[in-house]
Length: 531
Image 1 (cartoon, one colour):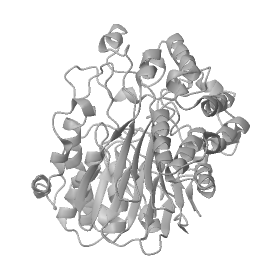
Image 2: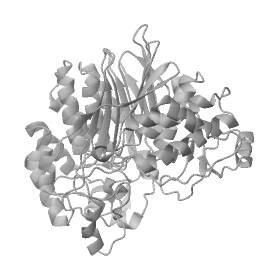
Image 3: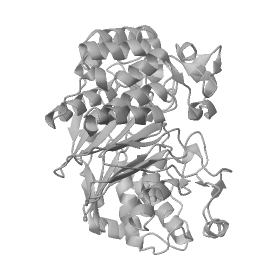
Image 4: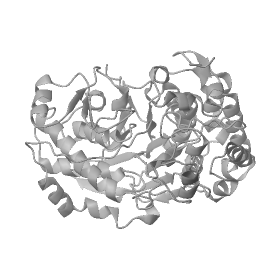
């Protein structure tokens, strides 16, 4: 059933109710959207560990009340010991998915929190760090119920995950997954978060926590060192922009796939499809996705190693040419690579009109599965997206940032409306963004209905190996039959609300009275909250 939307003058949306409550609490204490989002990021790292954690990465888009949009890139590079030779000498043809050898890159998310709070103070934010992290520390110390999402989720490569160092002791109950609703505490993680309050967020990279992280990584044989942590800092990035109809859209530049999200929306706009939820609507989105992914897969890499300006792919004439290649009567066959990932998207808009779109992840569910004993931090496996082929678009190299599926999104409409939106879901993220955005902006659906409506996914996600078009049950059977006749390989997933088709959210602020309409996905364990 659709999530009940919130109407407020300051609001948040998150895939877990406790994360939304943490953001709402900060707003109630006078915090701004950046402070609220940091509280949500900390809380969600505790209560939704299969999807994200402080051992992962994050990306932020922030629209100031004066209209300026800024980005925070909080993704870490490969460690200085992460060489192709290191893995070849181990007899490996690819980077493993689990264990210390999968813990390839520095965790950037805490650096992103620090930079976001620096910005928050510049905008008048005054809440102390202990107030911002209070909910996260309490949930880790006292325990919180295991979410329905985590309990029903069957991770890929279960044996190697459960065998990863310290995983079972942290996330399993007598060797088995916790049942939904069971209380699980994470005392080591609580201590780590409390130390961050005491010493400051920089302690993660250059203090006592950094020393403990580096010591555990070295003992476990991971390629990230103390020097890698010391050298890391999140950085600002200018967002990519697309002018479309009556709005300016913003997404994140490489190393993320934000360019694909904007290309999809730019191409779909040019198809001039009048009827929503029609065969043409679905076909147009699928075909735009194929073309966007073909560009993404040959271009997107570490920002500092790009072979051109990504904005060139968003030039109107370039988009015109790409759109003209879409056959509205037949499915094209364009292979796309697998971009998996389990992630959280969250949004916040405060009563001054500052909006945040945020995404945080450890890549696969529970990342590498490697939980560092001294700190309780589960480390990401984002480095899996590197290749051991030196001629690949994203070859493994020390200091290089990996390809990211993570993409936060914002939109500013000419009439003054402001939207923060996004979704988790690997390769699905740009597709889900396009589906919920067009349903709201092009076809007039409400915020809640746009997020609730049935979704489709072209490609692979969450362990599915087929390059099919995956659909929920609620699609019109006549449209599904028509798509099959056009050559689409349709895979019906057998459910009305499927986790693998994203946990999306959307907030829209209206200019007349500053009212915000906010919702989060009924496919998740969260919702929206406001004041």
